[in-house]
Image (cartoon, rainbow, N blue to C red; front, side):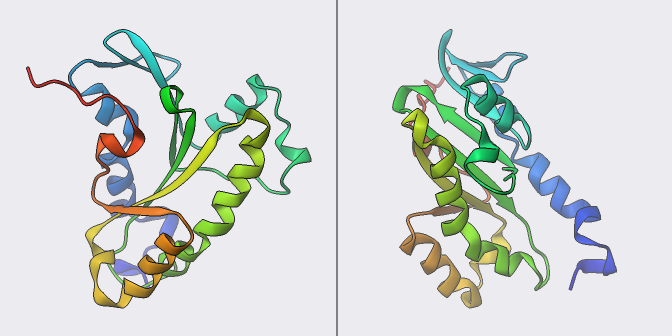
Amino acid sequence: MIANGIGGSNTKTGLIFEGKVDLATFLSRQNGYRIDSDRQVYYCDELVAQIFKKNEFYKFLEKRQVDWKKIISKRLLPDDSIYVIINNTFFVIECKFQQVAGSVDEKLQTCDFKKKQYQKLLSSLNMEVEYVYLLSNWFQKPEYRDVLDYIISVNCRYYFEYIPLQVFGLPIPMDS
């Protein structure tokens, strides 16, 4: 069930939530961080990461001569992702917003499969993969305890409303 009977792809509150947590926007507002037009992330003018949304991930693979079609059968489109150069880790970030019970509930249970698919895609590049949910506060309700426990049990992570920079291993800005 979706608030006001509007379909999931048109749910304005979900889009607002995802827009509110855009990684490039967040990082560009942090002291010492700069994002260029190729979504490369610099901290104090040192390249530390690169950010991808949806199909940009496949351009990243193509540049590294990884043919995804030979590895997995269907494209995965991450809400947001970041390759952190300094720790050679690719973080997939999925943003999930909910106001009423609905299909997002079951999507949370797919993290193990999706993380393994990303690991297959990135294994030839010898990158570590982390799968992280950024959840709205809706998911703090007691009825989500089992699924949240499951997310942790399959070595995925979740955070509510924000993800601290140290999770990515990115430099923490000094206060000005």
